[in-house]
Structures are given as structure tokens and as C-alpha cells.
Amino acid sequence: MTRSLTILSLLVLPLSACDWFYGPVGTSGQDQVSASSESGEIGRDDDDEPITTGAFTTADTGSASTTDAGEGESESGRGESGESESGEGESGEYPANRPNILLIVADDLGYSDIGAFGGEIHTPNLDKLAAHGRILTEHHSGFTCAPTRSMLISGTDHHLVGLGRMGAGTGPQAGQPGYEGYLNDRALSIAELLRDADYHTYIAGKWHLGSEDHQTPLHRGYESSYVLLPGVSTHFNEFSDPPTEAESRLYRENGEYVVPPADFFSTDFYTDRLISYIEANRGDGKPFYAFAAYTAPHWPLQAPEEYLDRYRGVYDVGYDVIRERRLKKLRKLGIIPQAWEPNPGLPAADNRPTWDDLSEEERRYEARRMEIYAAMVENLDANVGKLVKYLKDVGEYDNTFIFFQSDNGAEGGARDRANADNSLENLGYPGSYIGVGLRWAEVSATPFRLYKSYSAEGGHSVPAIARLPEQYRKLPHYNGLTHLTDLAPTFLELAGVPDPGDEYRGRPVHPISGISLLPTLEGRASDVRSETDVLADEQSNHRYVIRGRWKLLWLEPPFGQDPPAWELFDLEVDRGETNNVAAEHPDIVAELLLEWDRYVQRNGVILTSTVQPGGGGR
Ligand SMILES: [Ca+2]
Image: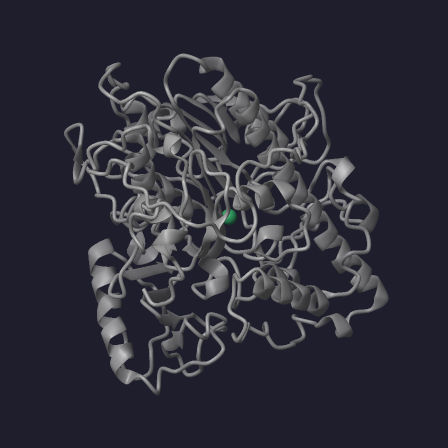
């Protein structure tokens, strides 16, 4: 596509990266084009060691005062099976030296929070990953946690596989296919496909795809798993002693309910669990697929004490100054074009004060929110560093494909809990329970409009980094359209596993709709999508359709048009969505509305909006 800056000749990979066979998808991996390098980091540069977290110990004294029973959506109904036979991959059936796959997903991390994407937060390990990999500047995820996770695992639209919305459908969506509220039995699981192809499969972190006995990661192809079942819990063990029934049903390890240890901190613990799973089978000749499904920096904002004061004073300058700094760096890094209008944020209102509207006391509290958020992100980064260091220590880093992304945009909702100890001095510690708030979420989403839950760019454009096996060189940003459903086919291609189509092990399944990123990442193709390929999504009636440079956008009140109408933006010059050009391009609007209708039809989308675009109604 025209926006792509991809140049085939810029890719360099050592041949040893291509030693393994990519399998029946027909790519040998041997036809790399050789090339000149981009400016900057060439070759190995392992000298600057990543920051690591302290070692985790599993002392389990009882603990805690405040409780959190989790607020994930209730899952109703029962999936029919969700289970498949155990793996039967024969030794020798697959080529030797297939790469490991490490998927790292942050939770509610905004587009410009990490250093590699323009943020002031100290994230040396993710920045290093970008320096050994490739930044995807236009990677689209779901609008919220559970739909995103259903697309990551199945490789297709969330309306097909049970998460058409958060939780089970109500009203006209009740009982309808695709609105089960858990991953349904027509969904493929990338973990199942890889396990059946002789991969070890591990997950630690958030699941959010079903809590019942037959809906756990164990039943979806994960050999080892430690998961938070619903969408949220506190990041420490703040359980009652003994835990309440609700508390004791928040986590499962390998299918069984478990209570985290007393010194639990989510991100540190998940990293250690994942490493222990990899370590347990290391050296048996099988590659692994590991999913670090982190729950940071999702509310409540909490971090280990050693991180809490690292950003003292940094955010005292307020929202606009931080936002301007990020914009400057985003431009300098080439992530957004120089001449490009960023979104200015929502206008001031009684419930949306600007920094100038705040008292000194209010500013101190607001700044502290972002200090804790930044602490949480830095801890997340340190855990990424710990994973990478482990892989290097055991000699697996070279042969590991790594993909990092956020699951959706920054969280802008009001998440403070009234019955918590949210005194200034307790923020970030056990007992506190706050979110980052709307204005900082806008900063996190810089340069985009709105944040998590919305179909504007701030809701679903997420930071993303891909690193090929044996890649030690930063490749030019890829600016073409990519989508989270592209990961499943990418992983299959890496593993040499054929796409199963619409049936797997005798079970009808929704086929993968994403497109493998591998040809583009390896320089065998210039783009993932053509100018005529369409991306579309809907959640809570917020909608978008993207085709090439054009984005048709529908936002529900109060953020949509008044009177209600679709908006049209030229993403090539206006990804900040500041200049609605629908009136100037009625032909494009009409074409994209047809694409929208096709999307609704194809994916069984059931809209419940009470507002309709002027005169029409769709
Ligand atoms: Ca999320």
C-alpha cells in the first residue's frame, strides 16, 4: 500500500535464521534478499544487560486485608467441548530447529507509553527488542481485553468465536452464536494447533475466555498454564485469610483453582511461572510457544515498592507538556510523519478538567496516578528483560520469534474504588485501587483520538514489535496495516503447520481470517495487505472500517457526531481523526458502507444501538 515505507532491500537476516523449514505453506525461508542496513544498530549488541526483576520466592504465609473478587464478566452457559485430543505430533514429522515463539501482551498499555514509541517511561528492554526487531506502526487490536484474546487465539473475528461483546450477550444478542461470552467450540486455538504439531505450549497471565472447568487453557491446547480467569484483579495477593469462595476462584493452574502465594505481584509471578514451564522441558528437542499474557498496566494501578518512586516529579508538568514531548519524539523516531495533525484530546468539560483547572492538591494526586502507572510499565519492561535474559542464558534467544503488543488502547474510564485506601501516600501499594483516568489515558494514546473501548484509533491502534529469530538489527518501521488476527497464521507459518481451513480434527471451525506477517517481516513480500483489503471491527456499537488510506468511523454518543453520522478520515494524513471528510467523499463513504454491511453479514454482528445515522439506519 502507498503508506508502506517497506523496502525489500533493507532486510538483512543471517542465513542461519533460515536454516529451518517453514513448512507446507510453501515458503522455504531461503530466499532472503540481502541488503544494506538501516542506520544504527548493526549486528549483535548484547553488552547492555537488561534490567531484571528480583528473584521470586514462593513463601506462602497467609495475608491481606482488602479483598478483590475480580470484576471480570460472568460467563454463562457451557461450551460444548472446546477440547481436542492430545497432541500426536510424531517425532520426525516436523523439521528440526523450528523456532520457539514468545508472545508478550501488555494490558491497556497506550500507544506512546514505551520509549520505542515515544514515551518517557524507562523501558530499555522493550526498546532493545525494537532495536533487534521491527516496529509495526499501524497494528490494530481489539477494543477491549476479552474480544482481543479471542482473536489472538483463534486468528479470526471475535463475533464468530464467542466474544462478540464482553461477557454473554443480552437482549437481541442473548443466546446468539458468537455471543456466548466464552471461547466457543467453533473457535480454533493456536495453542492446540501448535501442541498438536509437537510444540510445548505455555501461558501465564490473563485468560478471560471462559472460567468453567471445560473452558480453561488446559482444554484449549495449553500444556502448562497459570491464569487469572476474569478480566481484572488486584496485582498483589490481597485475599482474605482464608480466601473467600470468590477469591479462590480467580486463578487456575493447569485447570485447578489456585490461590497465589502471599508475596504475589502479578507481572513478576507470571514471568517466573513461564520461565519455570520452559525450563521444565528444556532440552527435550521440542520448541515452545509461550504466551506472557501480562495484566499490567491494567487498573488497579499497583507496582512493587522498589518502583513506586522512580517517577517522582516527572508528571508535575501536566498532561499537555508530556503529550507534546511524546509527539516530538514520535516524529523524531519516524513513527508518525512530521506533517500530521495529532488529536488534541476531548474539550474541557465539568467532568473533564484540564491541568490548568486543577488545584495544587488535585495536580499532586493526578501526577501520582501517572507516576504509579509508569512504575507499573517499567516493571513490565523489566520482566520482558528477564524473559529475554533467560532465553539468552539458556541459548534459546537466537531461535525465538518474539512478538509484543498491547491488547487494546489505554484505559480512560473512572476506575477508582471508593472503599479502598486511596490516600496519596498509599497509591500503588496493596489496599489502593485506582485507574489512571481520562486525561492521562489521552496522553497514553498520543497521538490518537480517545482510548480503550472505542473504535477511534486510540482504542485499537497499539504498540507492536516483531523480532525474527537471529535478528540483531533494527529494521525500518513497517507502516502497512496489520491486525492481531495475523499472529495465528504467522505462528503457524513459523512452525511449518498448515492452515486447517474450516475443519480441525473432525470439528467445524471458523477459518483463520488474518494474514501471516512472516513474508513481509522477512522481506519476501512488500506488504501484508493490499489497498483493497478491509479491516473492520465493532464493539458496543462503536464501529470502524479501514480500506487502504480510508477509515469510516462510527462512534456512539456522546463521542459521535450530532446528529449521528458516520465519519470518514484519510489515515495517510489524519490518523489523529481531526478532519472528517465524509461530505467531500460520498463515493468512498458509500463503498465503505458496503464493506461494513459485508463485515456484519460475514461475522454475525448484532447491533443494539438506539441511534441511527441521519435518515438511513443500519
Ligand atoms: Ca486490556
